[in-house]
Image (cartoon, rainbow, N blue to C red):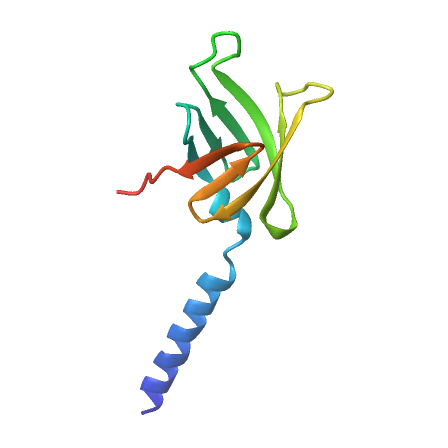
Length: 114
């Protein structure tokens, strides 16, 4: 009986550790596809990212950015080359685990799990 009680506590503690350590930022990390274009936005764990776009030849195809998760799933994205003194900012919000609104564009999370 004592062994079963210890095992139950260990399972509970493991579950709490896994579920309690999930930060809102973890939901954002990954690739997101624009629902209207072929643009993809990738958010990395180190708070950097890349916008991949091919539709507009006047814009570089791979645009780096840095991102910050604010309160209430709000997102701030500073777009620009590394080392630039100032960068344009974009704002958005994580609507759900698979929907991101960035400025006026909607993105859906790309499932990369197999």
